[in-house]
Each structure stands twice: as structure tokens, then as C-alpha cells.
Length: 309
Length: 304
Image: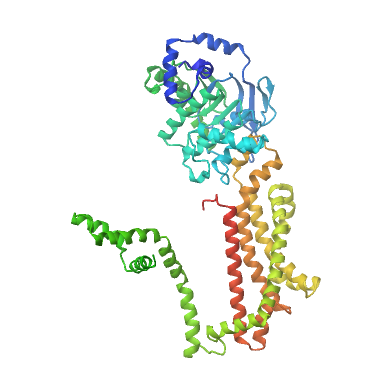
């Protein structure tokens, strides 16, 4: 399946599912959609998220100098795109996500969504955190319905929609479980369902799979792609894993060490993500390219940590 | 049915349960199940369905063993003369005295007086300390303003303040209820404050990201997250409410279990005194069990 035509492929599919995915891929390769046309159409429209010269400075208690987390960030995220953001640890990835989420305000610059400057958090953006952030006193279903309560959706509809998204993440039958009765992977599925349930345009994910074991992570990555193709969300996915960034992202934005800037945005063009994508020689090329970009930054970041510590 | 129950019941205590060995033995012989095997199997099945009850009974017996031993010692030691029966009458005499007090109406009267005071003070503490604690935990300036005073008072024993309460509110019911209230308010207040303050910041962040305003955030995240901690305070306060009340009733009262105990001792009705003490223990135990079950209902989600 051509990545740049995810929207069309969703529209053309009647029944979702793993087997169906494979089927539609076969059909698609027979009728290829020109890649240039897809991206060209996208480039013509305004960006979904526009980050313009954004900087964030924190005042640190007990330190004489302010702490610059990110500086001069310019980045456009296209409508319906899956963008991964990779950078050395402490480069301000999560700060950038908080800024886009509206949880903190930028010190300089502006962030626009659909051309409107954001003023605070809102239900047009959903966040998935690394540590799930589920409410332990609520069952899986009630957790998923949380955002709908904030949106004042009537109770009956809340339950229906929560059940729908529970099914979507493959957890039907686990609705009455409390978070502590679920495994890490299941909890993250619930968290994803919760963020999808109030139907945001943008999904912001802050290293959501970092705490999971390798196998669970891989299956959740696949599932996330399936959900993304089905729901047509714009996804901004933060990770420190190069493989994960290449595997998931249509584009990979590489950040510098602190103060974080965008070093390069890389187009990742695979014809299909079916099968063992990681064995594809081009996967290795992308991976190596990003690794080279990051290597120097990681060295700088480590030096920084040493001098601070 | 009665037969099978007795049979399985009789087998169970006899060391190794038969259900563990019977199938293995049958298989080792390698022949078809005999009528005898089927019989054991039958017991095995009934035995298995009964298992939840038998260990539970055994566990209950095990747990009450110490109590039974204590009761036995209480009965035997005075009777054998190892303990002076004038100061420690045998348990049976105490229970008889308790029964007489119950029939005579004194016990219900004193019990009611104590319960009323204790519940009033306790209820008042819940009604006032929880909202105050929530406010202190949530609203930083209030916490900064009040914490020196709170710090001072929490370290002032309620017992030390009893004379003050009596001075201000007189010897009647008011001073006792205020006294209980004061003692109960602290654990509830402090636990509520800490419950609100220790809410996982990520949960707050997550809720805020979904556009929750301060009021809804408090109602939907802070409050439910703090409930288990608040309940810990309530349970502590429940125990305090009875403990301190008895003391107040011994200092100045005309009714109540504390008064009963004190009065019985003054007039040398020693069995009556013990009857009063037993009643208080039972009341405290009951109160705690009640609060525990309420707590469980409210925090089923808690893992520990």
C-alpha cells in the first residue's frame, strides 16, 4: 500500500481487518496511485499543525541561568500524516509535544492548528503518554469514556462509543477490567482508545511504546498503523528509537540536542508496510541516515548531561 | 447429601485429602474404575465443591483459636485461684453480669449514650474535616496560611484540651461531642490533605489535556484519586471516636459506657466493670469492621 495515499485506501475499503488489509494491498499494486500526485495534493493544502519559530525557556529554581528546552522550531505537520519525531534524550521532544498539546505556552513563536493559534488544551488533540495515565478507579470502558464526559456526550452514546473503540484496539471483553488487572500492552491500548474516543483530529503520542517489551511493542506498532489508516488521524509520534521512527513515520523529523531544533525532516517512502519491512534494504538505508544524523547529537547530549551532573 | 457432607468433612481433616491420592492410585493400577473408585470419585467431586467452605472454616477456627484460649484462661485462672477472683472474676460471671445489665436496661442506656456522642463527634469530623482538607490540599495559599496553626494543634493532645472544652461547653453532651470531634478531625484532615496532594501528576496532566477545567478536574480526578487515603483517615478516626469518648465519660458524665465502667469500679461491682469493658471492645471492633466494608466498596480499584 502506498503510504501517501492512506486516505484513499481507507475510503475504498468496506470491511476493516488484517486479511482485508492484505487483500487491498494486492488490489492497490495493480492500480498504483502516483505518489507525486498524492503528496502534491497534500502540499497544496494548509498544514494541519504549523509550528513557527517556537522556543520554550524554563526558569529553574536554584539555577542562575534559565533553561532553554527548545529553540527556533519550525515544523509543518500535514493533514492525515504520520510524523515521527526522533531525537537524543533530553532534547525537548516532550516539551514540544506539551506545547502542541497546549499544556504549556511557548516563550517565543506560535503554534497553529488549522490556521488558528492554540491557546490551551483541547479535545481536537488527544495525547497518549508513555506511562498510560489511565485512571485507576475507572474500568477500561469508563476510562475510554472519560474524554466523552468532558465533551458532555450523553451517557448512552458515551457507552456505545467507548465500546466501539474498545473493540477497535482489540480489547472487547475487557471493558469491565480495572487498569491494574490489565497488562502493560493492554493498558496502552486502552489509553489509545481513550484518546481516539473523543475523535480528535490530531493524535500526539509521547514514546507510547517505550515501556513495553519488544514483542508487545511490535504488535502495537502494527496495530497503530492499522488504526491510523482506518481513522485517518494526523499523528505526531515521539520516540527515541530509530527503527520505530522509520517503521511508523511517513516522515521522520530528527531533532538536535538541547536546545532542541529540527535538524532534518526525512521522507520515508515505502510502497507497502506489509511483511517484514525491517528486512527491506531501504529500511536499513533510512535507519543508517538517521543514525548518522543523531550520532553527533547524542554525543553532544551526553556531554551536556555530564557537565550538568 | 448429609452423608456425603459428613464423609468429606471427616476425610478432609485427616491429613492428606483423599482427592489428591485417589485418582493417581486408580491410574497406577491401570484397570477400569471399580465401584469403590467411583465412590471415592464421588466423594472427590463433592469434596471439591465443598473445598471453599472447609478451609474457610479451618481458617476461621485458626484465627479464633487465640481468642478461645484467652477466654479459657480467663475462666480457668480465677477458678483455680491462680488469679484473685475478686479482682478478675471468671468470664462466665462477667458474661452473666453483662446479661443482667442487658435485661435490666442499664447496658442499652449507657451504650446508646456512648454511641450517640461518638457518632455525633465522628460525623461532625467527617462533615467538616474532609471539605477543609480538600480545600487545603487543593488551594496552595490556604495551605500556606493554615499550616503553622494546624501544625501546632495537631501536636496538642485532645486529652490535654478536654478541661478547656469542659470549661467552655460545660459538663454536658456538647463538650464530649466537641472532644470526640476534635480527636477525630485530625486523622481525617491530614489524610485528606495528603490524599489530594499526592495525586499522580500525570493523571492531572492527562485530564487537563482533555480540556478539563479546574472544577471538573477536581471532581473527576482529584477527589476519586484521594478517596482511599481519605478512608484511611476515616477508619483511624472511627477508632479514636470510641477511645477518647470513654476517657471523657470517665472524667465527667452521668451515662455512657465509660461512666458505667468507672461507676462499677467505684462501687466494687467488678463483673459489671468487665462487662462494660467487653462491650467497648465489641463496639470498637464492630465499628472498624463496618468502616472496612464501606472502604472496600469505595475503593475496589485499589491494588494494595
